[in-house]
Image (cartoon, rainbow, N blue to C red; front, side, top):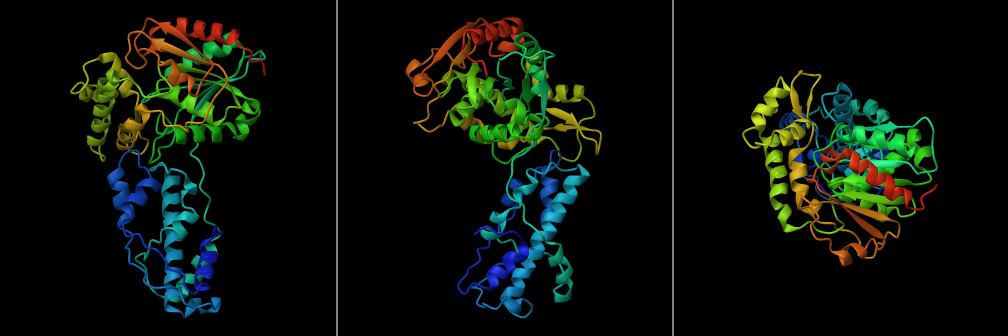
Length: 426
């Protein structure tokens, strides 16, 4: 049952004769999914949990009389729950407004919190007269939504019939890395180019789970935003590097009628070769490094970040790439990680895979750009590609995995030439 608010839930529960309330005593896992603190995750959990005490609720709610709310013992405890939810919502949203937290999906406080998980007993007085004002303020429990993605949008002065492009970065990347290439493509193809920060990257919000499915859904939600809806309503072309390439292919399988073409840069629609293990190991070391940093005091300069990174990464170019995942915090003027290291490390295994419904097929054109000095693609397993993408081409680049930065001009030219051979006019 989906409820409109905490008061509705209280009335509903008191009317049920055999309604058992589940109580989850482990609060921290839920708070991890509710709030992501970009600078002090441990401190954020401590701040919230210090305000909350959890007490199990036993037995069914027996009264069918909604007027018994003020007198029935168990119904009274339900009101405590409602008050707790209201206070939790206020606490999270108030903190979110201060800018000290990045509140993942304010609407995460949903009917699931009410019907599946009951968190009990804020440290407050049991004086029933104090409940009236609180209950009047409870008007809704928001539905679950999607995090808003940060993005850049390039619109050319003159527009052709080419569908707009969506240009996705790879793991630990952000929209700034592809900004120049994106702007060049917009000018050359005379079409809009959107460069979003994928979830858990750049300036987009962090979430407790990182997956291709989640990123695909968040992109679909982004395309429906009022500022972008008209541009992307009739379809678009997906381009993605590395993780962004698999995200683009996953999205094409989810929305085949909207995606006009897909270009994946040094990634494939199946499990990456074993030879990529050292590369993913570098990412894993960085994620652990991020989690090891003290949450209270950051680093005052990017040079300090680079200096600490030298302990685990000798490649100066790669370190510069990693440093881009730090940002200065307005609250303390220090540099802190912008990414949730533990979440991304936990997702690495699934990112290597390509776990989609076996029956999904995208019949539109796919271009695989393969870097010859990279282990991410290797020998193309044509049957594995054709399982989901029967219409595909392969173009080779004599570069490392970082195709776009190694040969941006060649990349732009290859994209332009390949798209010109496709029947994509929107």
